[in-house]
Amino acid sequence: MDFDIKNINIEELLVTYGLKVVYALIALVIGWVVVGFIIKLIKKALHKAINDLALANFLTSIIGVLLKVLLFIVVASIVGIDTTSFAAIIGAAGLAIGLALQGSLSNFAGGVLIILLKPYRIGEFIEAKGMLGTVKEIQIFYTLLNTTDNKLIIIPNGELSNSPITNYSREPIRRVDITIGISYGDDIKTAKEIMSKSANAHPLVLKEGDAPSNPVIVVTSLGDSSVNIAVRSWAKTPDYWSVHNDLIEELKYKMDEAGIEIPFPQRTVWMKTENVVSEDTKNS
Image (cartoon, rainbow, N blue to C red; front, side):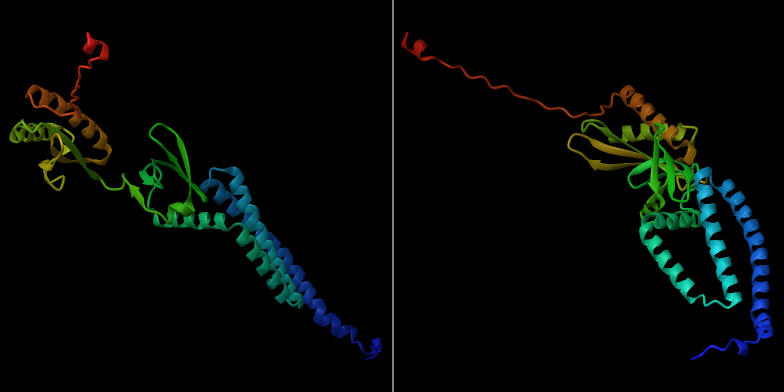
């Protein structure tokens, strides 16, 4: 079909597309200013929330690019350009990036869940993935633990959000279980009285009212070489190790004073000797 330039209405084109271009330019300028303001707010918030400056800047740049791409799509739609192709390209790029960063996205999602659900907080002592330590920092992708001997453990948040976590600090009180083995020849009642007096005399051991019960003394098992007796007392969570260690030391002294033996593994070896007579001795 022949294209006749005489049939083109210049005024109609200017009215139809000129106004759209003007609206698009206005939207672009206003949108650019708004995006810049939003990026500054996000950058300031991330710098406060994340100690890692490089990570905060990286996330800010990603968010900035996404906002600017969204702005250009809006401007293109105002002009009248079909944005379906843009959406398809962005969707394909997002899929490719998602597949490439699958592990990182899993860690990011795990970090979000941890921050929202709070299975542990900074300063709490936890056990996770076979590791024990105090939570030092909760980052977007990783959680940092400090062990009791001051080693740093870095665990991906994706693994933490999908595995059991033992939080030793969350409850206000904990039960302190200590098992002592005594000899079969010793008196069980005497040993139980010593353990009861030691536990009740400790200033950090909680009594009934502040705890579910007073210290309880029970025979737990009859071992190969000992009668095993447990003392179960309650203490405030920060006092757990003080009570645990103090009672072990105190019970050792008290058992020694009472003449009660705490058995340890022993083995009796019988040596059998044979008189070997040589042939020369027989012939002599």
